[in-house]
Image 1 (tube, rainbow, N blue to C red):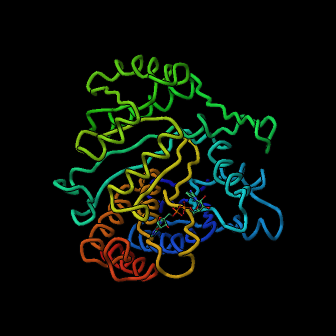
Image 2 (cartoon, rainbow, N blue to C red):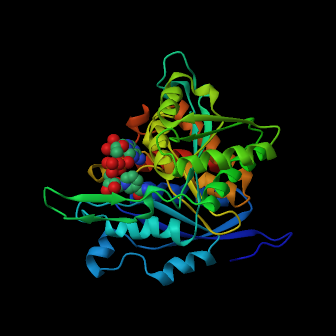
Image 3 (tube, rainbow, N blue to C red):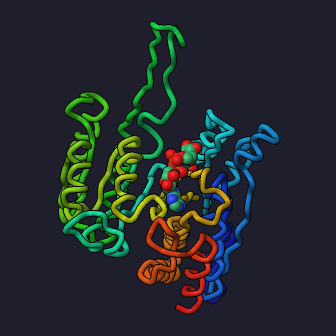
Length: 360
Ligand SMILES: NC(=O)c1ccc[n+]([C@@H]2O[C@H](COP(=O)([O-])OP(=O)(O)OC[C@H]3O[C@@H](n4cnc5c(N)ncnc54)[C@H](O)[C@@H]3O)[C@@H](O)[C@H]2O)c1
């Protein structure tokens, strides 16, 4: 890590993996905006690009070498685009790179802000942008995504497929506590935990017991519970009731796609994969959308907002606000891609944000 000393310019070293498909297109624009922010501010970013992804996997058989994964700890942060390529139908490289990084660096908090930046993007009748402003904390290292299970009598009519759902007290407690701590630090007054404990009587009963044992430590914050089916309904019915949501890995994955739609679509959604105190990884919520790859149509704003989130996490709060402000202005003036009502391509949208950041 490159240290920052009082009176000296702050420096940060970031590993950048654009990945596949539109991951490459949007990461280019996020880099452009990060460069503009560092020129406008008094900090330096060393962005070191790595080409791990489908292309390299198909060429060399390499996904993410253990040495590279361990080496991420030496960086201040990791930024990723998206992974997924039709030429790799089993997603081997994507699983190794994305899940490998999340599990390998123990990035247990997947933080996904759901914030609508313009009334024009709010899809709900009778609601405005200001009514959609909450943060989802998705448990990122356990649950149904640990890959434990197997098949019996595979490819026969008697096949049995078992997928284990792993919930540990340590894992559940740390994400719930992190969500409450975030609420306390950021002036949020309510935390909603969502599970399916009425049906999942063991794993999600643990979520219930842990949530109600941690909640009393945060007396100033209202603790609230909704089953996940009710949560999805309420997110559409009245999003104003949510400030912080904490949930398991799979439910967090699903409800944040719904959340993305409340903020203008997948192209607008940002996320961070965080291990408090350790190197963390930031990536837009969307995937590699192969049909749009290289066509200058993908919306780079989710990736750009992800870059702002990363700067905020690194203590560069002001530059993060410049970027968020510039994105909101671009949306307002329709200097953005067609999916959010604009008339620009991917690169010109990145230019428009970077110009505003430089002139902040
Ligand atoms: N974190 C990741 O890297 C990640 C996440 C989800 C999916 N994937 C992978 O990506 C590939 C494609 O998956 P998918 O089609 O289900 O999801 P996707 O997010 O790539 O795309 C779904 C649809 O959302 C829209 N969209 C997404 N991002 C956009 C953007 N930046 N600008 C404009 N429109 C955008 C497009 O209409 C697109 O067809 C698959 O291989 C999948 O496994 C990767």
